[in-house]
Image (cartoon, rainbow, N blue to C red; front, side, top):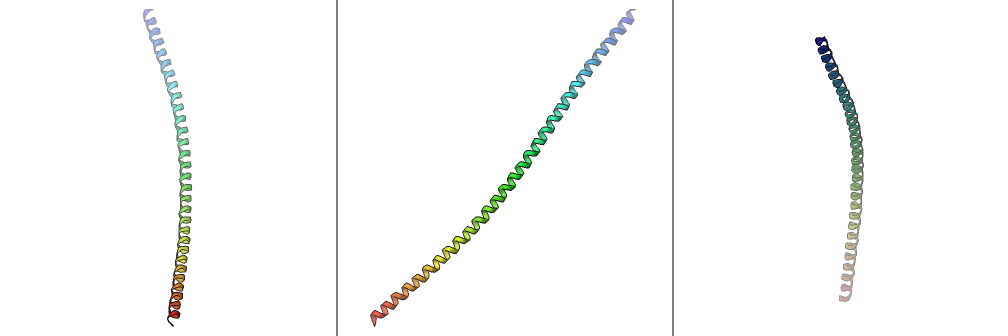
Length: 109
């Protein structure tokens, strides 16, 4: 009878340990599943952030390129206007010199 009680006691202890291990494994599985879902969510969010950042950078590069082209066009336009103004001033100076020379000649004659 004592041996049977000892076997029943050992059996109950083993079943108790098995139940505790089963519950622990179940909680570990739940925690692992939750962590996996959390990591998937963070990975997805990071992917979306990176894609948005890439689109933003592409847009910035496009705008910077357009701005650089506009600056080059305006610089060329201003250079052309400056050169035309210089030619006009030179022509006026030459015309004025011609008038002065003509006036000097006329006064000498």
